[in-house]
Length: 130
Image 1 (cartoon, rainbow, N blue to C red):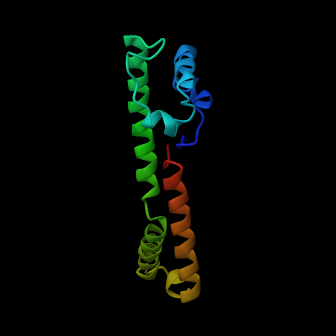
Image 2: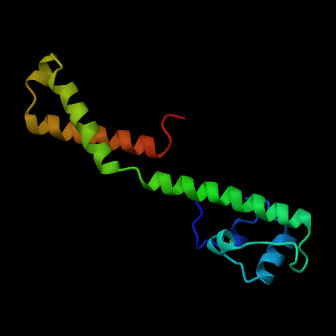
Image 3: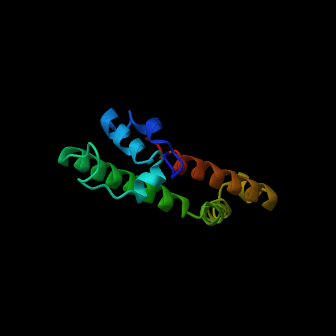
């Protein structure tokens, strides 16, 4: 994942940034993703043609979307999800008429519920059962 401190040369291959674009940006002292997001390219710059301008604007758009997605991912309150999942699991265990469940200690049911919630969150974070 990228962040504002990521160097452009580190992501050049992944985003297929041509060397000439890296050189243009470095000549303008733009070396990180954060600096690129604040950068305003124009055709008056040295070695900046319409194609270079288009590539830089497309790259800014792509990186902006990825940074926004990362921000949205961070906004997920995993602790709240964990609590809700544990409660749902506990309700399922407690309502199960199976003899083993009926005779289980409340402490065991609570532990199983938390384990189930933790497993569910781990699966969600890795993208489910892809």
